[in-house]
Image (tube, rainbow, N blue to C red; front, side):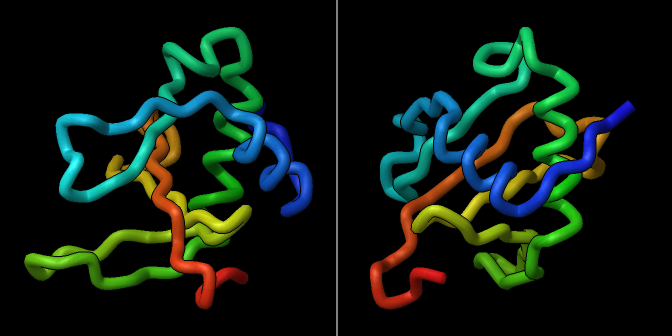
Length: 102
């Protein structure tokens, strides 16, 4: 069963998560956290966070006619490129400019 979290609980988990810089895409600076590497012993927690992110994201244009759902917290925007909560095994994050902090 997927746990239900508040925004404060999700934001803290996202802030405390381990991330790796996406060095193969250095021209689009961002980092990512992986279910099977960084959350392997906390799978229920992962899916609770992902569910909240999916349900509280805003759809925005990226480029090349693509749209992604972004969740804003902790001075970052977070997004997944997977087709569903159940298939999400990677969560990206990128720093947002200071003037846009929520």
